[in-house]
Image 1 (spheres, rainbow, N blue to C red):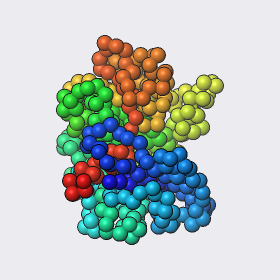
Image 2 (cartoon, helix red, strand yellow):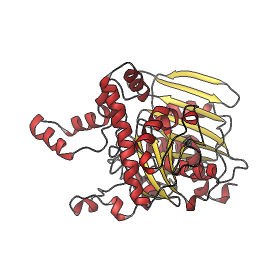
Image 3 (cartoon, rainbow, N blue to C red):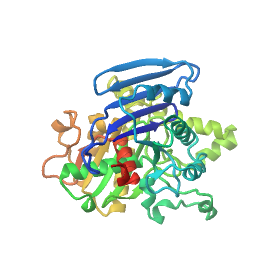
Image 4 (cartoon, helix red, strand yellow):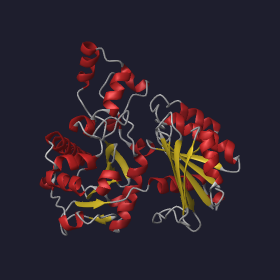
Length: 399
């Protein structure tokens, strides 16, 4: 059978087609037999589309009218095989979706109630579900995996926020995000270590443009850094992370800020970009710092300090730590970030193996032999995880 995965952001769409023949639920991730990437971030310009297959064929083209329905029709026309299952990443499932779920009309209506919590993601992801249903018809079942679902296990002392009691009635609480990545990486870490996930205490560090940590005990998320929205927690590429909320009150009262102005500055002009004055891309920040730019160096130091400080804080939720795991764009590819965080956490016993760390390690231990806690760099296979969870939710009738 074949499983088609839709992983949509606010201005892009990644698709992967997996051949699920003979794949065990906990098997090592396999490469997709077809993949596509569509970028419609230039709202007034054509969408850019790149399609690749396992046969090494590559298609690059533009779609003049970047409408979801027309994009999906073009993608479907290039598929090497028809899918039996369509799987969708959906950012916010609130407190209603703790697992992958079939996207029946009722489930879609429930998911829509969280659109205002993730206005840049949920609406477009659910639009893709609608258009995929029209395109493929009822023979292809639609399933959703929610970024918040993995953190549904947070205990009350972690998800309740210290605001007025009525906030809880309004759904204002910590939800956590990047759950698909954290869950995938925790399982992969156990495989790499040859350990039972139920016996491990892990902190997974998803460091990309968006950044979050998760404290995982026995395969269960018990604490995380993102909160009601993906804006909370670590310093990120263009997001501020945790700041004094009194600043927001000051900006409203003294500078006439609107909600839209606050949203734009906190989500798009802050973090590495705001501190450095250069970019939210860690590679550009590192290049500038190496050239003597003090603000870029400050951005790097604040970023790595934020990661280390939150790691140390999350250890209290675990009562100890077996391994710290780096993943996502920065976590997988920046030896400088991994080294700086390790140095700041040396008091915990963490020591990095410099030679391994600088050798572009993926899916391997990067700490010195004999030291504890361990450090690893592990590739996040979100699309594989989405397919895996949807296959499990669909049940044996698909086999």
